[in-house]
Image 1: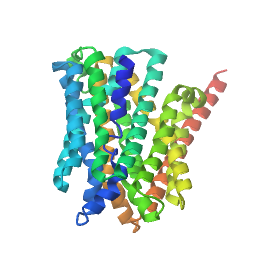
Image 2 (image 1 turned 180 degrees about the vertical axis):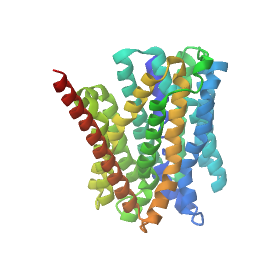
Image 3 (image 1 turned 90 degrees about the horizontal axis):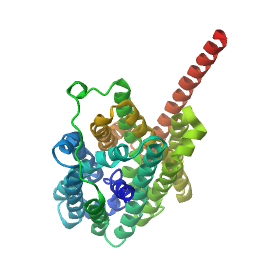
Image 4 (image 1 turned 30 degrees about the vertical axis):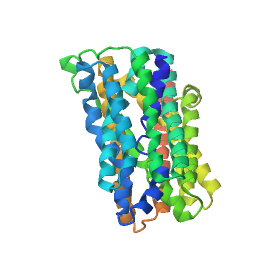
Length: 386
């Protein structure tokens, strides 16, 4: 039941801000005089508010039990999530989205860090992959469910956040009550260079990935290939393949070994490029499938590496920083990519997807070159020492 509880938390977190993305077109139609960039903030404001709360979550778990922090976070999550569908003003809607972000900020660092509290060795690797799989299962449920609810009315799509009530009762009944041990003073804030590289990698990964949910509803409308509920199905495709990537994370690591990250960057980049070139719903879904599979392996790779490069007592604080960079990347994504499209003189969503896809393919090629050069150098060194 502990594992089930952890998985229920994972369902709510990574795609929390994007859960209502299938309704974005309908929301924009309901607020015709509101600038499109403000409409996109419905998805990105939660990410911005998650960041400061996630950063202090490590401190909170030394004052209150992790159980209490999770329960309070889940309560705020439900209020902020459902409340967005009950207002008639765009700024009130954004305020409730900010409240949602505060709730997620309290939940998300714990949803990954508690894995290291209960599991070790290969079971930790497997569980971390399963947590990422449940992140994406939550995406499937929220996106498809939100899309179906949006077909009734855009306000109903916010009802998807009522799923937080299930997690609330699971934590209340099954999660043990304990606080985080105090971190030694000499290690405060010192995570090491590798950790900060991983945090930066998470930021840029989210900048590139979040181009998909922030633009998908509008992209489908512009392509004239479907309605709100179709957006949920299309987005559900990438979360479905990401779910399977998380489930088979251990097998992927065993198959590709040291080049796993490079391979998955290539797969993800190729998928987004296909989306940028898509002229039919089938091609768009295929691109989403490849993109999701790559992302589903990259996320647990970063989380696992973090647990290895920091001390056990630093895990919650480290995951808080990683989570903050994850959501900062989500918030910054439309700002960075929209400005890049202006610089290149092409503001189309097709251009944004093509730019993101090509960028990821180039990064993966650089990774391959670095890895093979290291492999070749080590081989030469071994041969010369024989």
